[in-house]
Amino acid sequence: MGRYPKNYAQAGIIPLLDLAQRQNGGWLPLAAMDKVAKVLDVSPMKVYEVATFYTMFNRTKVGKYFIQLCGTTPCMVCGSEEIKKTIEKHLHIQV
Image (cartoon, rainbow, N blue to C red; front, top):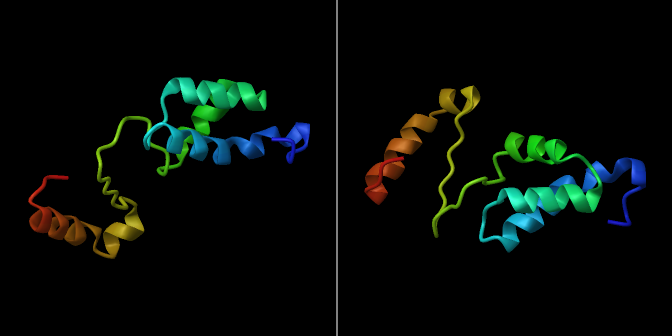
């Protein structure tokens, strides 16, 4: 993490969380988030804030296949519910 100046260590949170998630089978255990905080010398809460804000970070184990649908208002207006129904029907699953 030498590429980040000391006072900008938190800039490395997202890249390290991504690496930790890939190393842990697609999810971020609390221990991995704590390790990121320790490596960057930032508070664990700062790392938790980032991990919980971005939907690309999974804080629980995920299956072999992971389907994620947008649930924001713009996505709903553009038909995300119809996409969800189509996926459920095609894959015979409940989302």
